[in-house]
Length: 85
Image 1 (cartoon, rainbow, N blue to C red):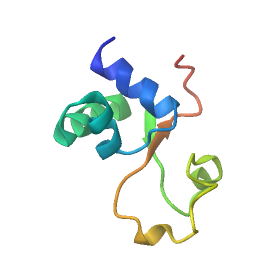
Image 2: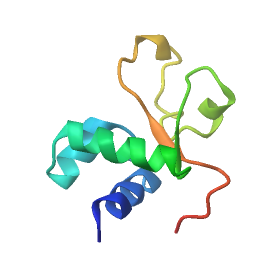
Image 3: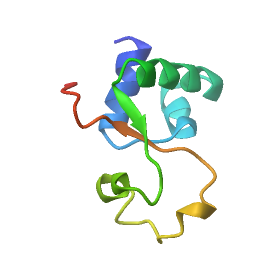
Image 4: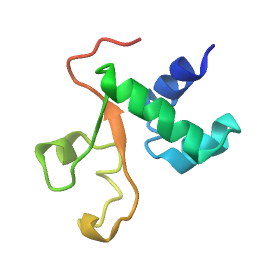
């Protein structure tokens, strides 16, 4: 499995930030950020904007204290229109 597919698989499973993806794939955060930019440009994923309707489907919704402005990272999810499996 290539790095793009592995990153998509992890995001689909709910791993939604660059640091955790990098840790699980044993690659640098910078490499993950590059992969994420590619996947975003291809339309496979989108960045979750806090406070937007995307929060309703956020995998962290159950544990989020509702103060997302304190969060310093970025969260990604599969695009709703994408049928990646």
